[in-house]
Length: 128
Image (cartoon, rainbow, N blue to C red; front, side, top):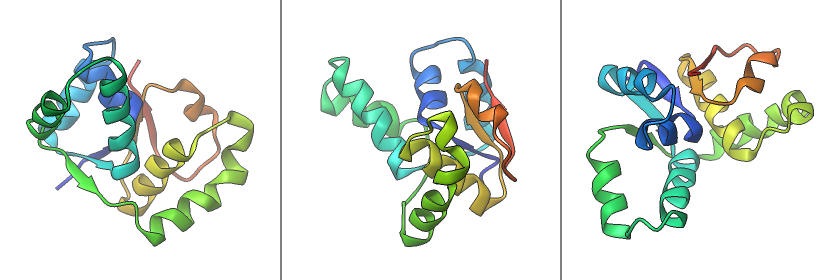
């Protein structure tokens, strides 16, 4: 069972050993989930950094995250978050993470501090 939902920025901080990555490591050990859209964002960043495909798969598979499909229900929830998050400039990936956190009733972990300024009925934990 998952204890939180990771944003791509949080998982990337863990993978690149950035500040806040230790908080993400604790969440992963306790059981963390991630949406397929956010997972894809992390794959994109690793690929852009030059990491070979096989290494990307090996690295991400070894973490043991619960990966949850971005389905029609999550798509609707993410879309409905747009008016509430537009002024903060949140992306589809950001809203996908928040929608999943809301659906599961779990906190969302992110490195994006602007999320704390949002007035949402979703717990947000900033890792740094």
